[in-house]
Image 1 (cartoon, helix red, strand yellow):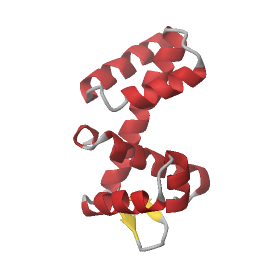
Image 2 (cartoon, rainbow, N blue to C red):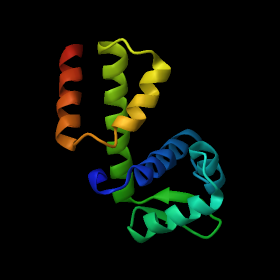
Image 3 (cartoon, rainbow, N blue to C red):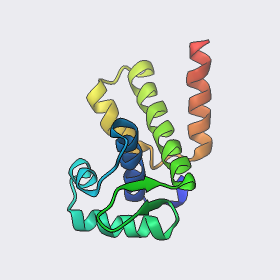
Image 4 (tube, rainbow, N blue to C red):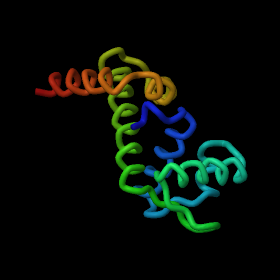
Amino acid sequence: MPDSLSASKQDYLETILDFSQETGVARSVDIARTLGVSRASVNKSLGALRDSGLVEHEHYGNIRLTTVGLKMARAVRARHNALKMFLTEILGVDEETAEHDACRMEHAISRTTAQKLEEYLASLKK
């Protein structure tokens, strides 16, 4: 469950998901560049995620989310998207600020709050 992971680990899962969807492969060098951390930091975090059963990563190989990791990454992404939509479409926050704020807020809200927010946004589209 995403609530039990640190914000940093959630960011790693989300970044791996993004690269997997965009290019079909996630590599540690790309993750390091995106998150602004060293490759050593990426390798340490990937080891912890692997030990938790969230990613598969061969030494110097491509990184893949496990079924559980994929579920968690999608949950974080859904919270991010709902928050960003709320900030831009309801509150009128500019895209750049909304992206930054959603990235920070996605780690702080509960699943219950995220679900209620998604339901609220869906009701507006009807």
